[in-house]
Length: 195
Ligand code: HEM
Ligand code: HEM
Image (cartoon, rainbow, N blue to C red; front, side):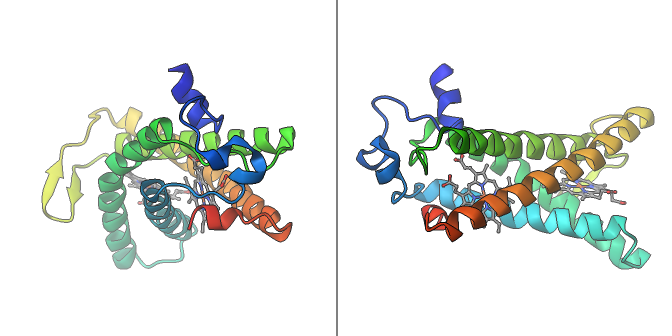
């Protein structure tokens, strides 16, 4: 468990690190493995869409009919995404990590905390989304899951948690994108590690 947590926190694990991850200099040029890259970009697409469209709807930019259609689509796609996100976390725990991007201790710590915050907040957003449902979950008309909670008061509580966690996720994501841009502008090819 200690080892797997270390991996999610980006510590190199003895015996599993690649040659390139032995030094930050080498790690800078190594990449995430193909499964990690696919899972990252698939997650990014679903999360960015659900976040942007959800916030736009909350701001009242859509008429009732398209709003209902987008909400139905979002509920289905994010519920289908939930097991994929669990797979992503499991993969981050067991797969070898390319190693730290820089030798600067504070930056490495900031990256670890930032990535952990993204995993944690996304998990809360997904779980609270399912638990706030006050109606069955329609998966593109292919299957229907019953609402998990029957007490409307609890559904409302989780709706509040869903809203709040979406706001935190937006902040952590903005910091994530700013960090990527910051490293990139300083000549560290961080984006290439994920491409
Ligand atoms: C266009 C949007 C995005 C870009 C350009 C981007 C870019 C990147 C890059 C370059 C890395 C590698 C960092 C490194 O080498 O240390 C990374 C890692 C990561 N990204 Fe993103 N990202 C995006 C969206 C997202 C979203 C929406 C999430 C939401 C959860 C996310 C979560 C993460 C996490 C958790 C990691 C660390 C992976 C790990 O080591 O386990 N990213 N991202
Ligand atoms: C990637 C995960 C998810 C993201 C990023 C996301 C994002 C959002 C956002 C930004 C809102 C608007 C919040 C506000 O009022 O300020 C929202 C509302 C909502 N979300 Fe999610 N959500 C996700 C997952 C889920 C899941 C898994 C479900 C249910 C299965 C769900 C169901 C809903 C519902 C029913 C609403 C209210 C729509 C309305 O106003 O009628 N969401 N979501």
